[in-house]
Image (tube, one colour):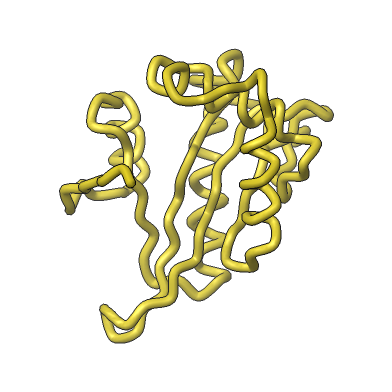
Length: 153
């Protein structure tokens, strides 16, 4: 288990983009869809995220090094009697930090932050091929209750 005393979870800054994008690209799926050599599109997206109070893009920082990230989105809704939900997206852990409990720390942070933000439900999606991630989320109490669909536009 990781020593958590030197770990800080904080709001991401534009200076974190190279590390975040590198983590997004560092797996078989990300390698086909991310471009860490050109951060132009990521800077534009970061500005939109950073300017939206419903978006919480965070990094896990260990001794000044970005070692994990996730994005938490707050979605107010009418269903479930006007419930607010949060969506966890883009969870990534640096390759040399995987398997040490950092993912658990990040997800637990996101669930607690969701409570603080008044959410009644926390949801996430995970690519169907990421069976290890599915077991991880189930271990943390998430239930595979829905079938997700995507349409590229």
